[in-house]
Image 1 (cartoon, each protein chain N blue to C red):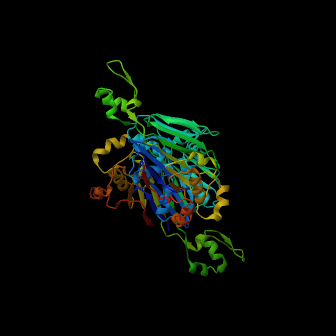
Image 2: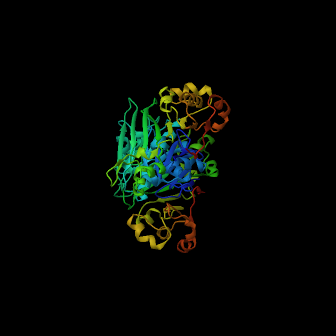
Image 3: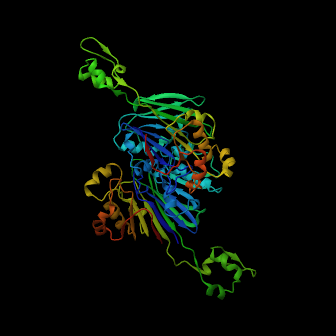
Length: 304
Length: 304
């Protein structure tokens, strides 16, 4: 079952008591990191999570508070004796910036595979190295620079039906393969498809991550029906709306409206302004918009 | 009087309870920062020091644990409405790497002035924007990349002698100028030099900062007669000496030997390996080499 940890909840700059916004998603022993600002590698350790399990990095955009921790993170992965490649997904045209940042890293003992994602349209891809049942969708956001939101849909394993397997007289040695989704040919020549002995009754788990953007309508499409929608909310004061929108950001209220429109099950707010010292003070009015909102704190986590 | 704060004491990677090695030197309301790794801007705040007072950045070398915090630090300076230029001193040929790192910073509202320092010889320069009485010396170290050590000599203000001024019948309005070191011409035509009414009895304060290097002899020259010598010591276990030297580092024992040779008044150790969890356990044997050694902790500070 995917476990989601919000490593930090701060925007713009890291504070002594608040790490920069980034997210760690673990499933079946492998992890995905979304964004990696200054101090994110410390936040991973502080949250009791493991840097070495990270097999994929998703980047929303190339502002320093979301990427300046990348050199240190990559070096720490290398110090952990990593040899398998690391996949980094990022907005189109930004690979050169990653290469620029790498100028302060000595040679890494593993391959970096950079994958640029389109800025004009949504894009769905699978992450076979992590989990063949995981589907990721990127969608362009609207910020002061090119920015992507992400949805991650964790498919659930098929449930094996021993009664059906017995009724079909399938030898025990084929059960594991069929459960893993493979079609098998029995000694007697019969071809058995996994659907004949499994059921797919468990709904996939969907997590959506959106930060550094105006509250545009397509965010509700991306977050549609999410089990967990993680979204920025710089301030909870209505009078900050204009100044935030000018900077390509949104209010906590905007995030709640989007969650409602998306039919999300729960909303975690994040990316608070450094000037927003006590975001929890806005809880009552936000719950009036979207009941299942959490004014997240660093290290917030859930198993879905 | 200069106040020296060792913001962090870690090498290689930042830990939840140990910031990366960097130093904050404040004098007359202006500050110098030496190195700026991941999280250094948080360490400045955590130590109760001010980012906005920093007017000069000295860089020892371009490894990530010493410079990856630069983009975030420069942005935070900009958020603090800075308009005056910032001077950055760094090893020869490395300005391009700073420019690479800046690709993740939007336009800064102040000028960056990059000054490259020679790698073949020591170099002395003054820092007029900080303090005309401050002299800085850089010296090439020996590491796996180009690296500099720094000595900072804070000259002390002249002590004004009112009795001498009265004896020379110098009007009161000229006293402040003479105290500040200026030569003045009186209404009666006499030219008075500051030396005639001041005394320079206070010894300058010298601080030396050396990290990421083999324990080469010229470090003792750089640190000669220092009031405070800050030096790396990755481990305190003698059996780590060979492996450390191969990586261009030294042991705590090497730093103590250098402090003794330099005739330094006190030594602060720093840049501990992440695997060196309790550096203080080595204190007794280190004091046997150099009595006035401090196994520094993050936030160690002194007024000299």
